[in-house]
Length: 228
Image (tube, rainbow, N blue to C red; front, side, top):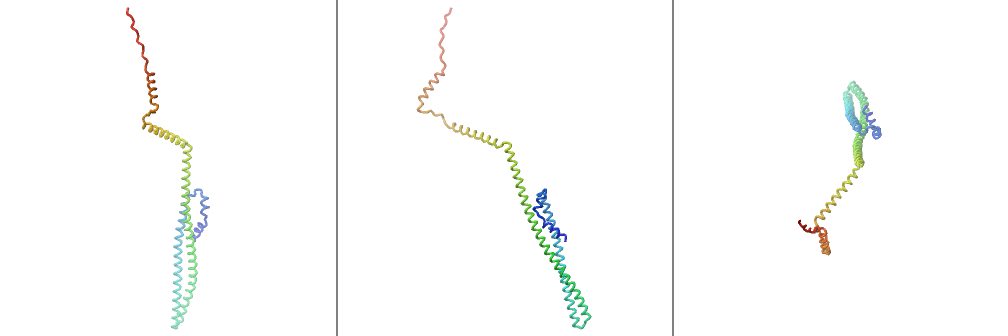
């Protein structure tokens, strides 16, 4: 049967070696899975045909066995009645049926062996199909993770190339200065000037002296000039 050859070819194929030789392994995985699904569908139809043949041969065996039993009863009845001619005809038909029965039984046994072999090969094909689908999902997941890692590395390298780290450090330093200035202003805004009590008299003298130094000096009055 043609389906046996196709199933055997797939079962003997090394999936890992095949994928390694593919130019676009991930792109061809779906096609490979579809091909195996097609083979499974063909195997299903082949199994249905095989089961029909097995059932048909089983019916032939049963019908022939029934015919042999019937001719045997007819021959026995004819002998009991003394009808030897009828008995001879019944026995002749019985022998012909028995010869066919042996052939039908051999054919039925061969068909049953083929059916069992087909079941086994279909099970192997189904297991291989399940394994391939699982490997496909794993490879696709790994490929996606690898591509994402590459993209992430590319983004990080791009940031490093543009010196974004230095810019962020400079911005952080600027913000820290603003925060320090704001803290200093808040500290001094909440306190009034305080003079040391021990130095208060000395400070007062220095203040008066400073005021005198800064006062404008008085100009001397001019004497009136005599008139002519």
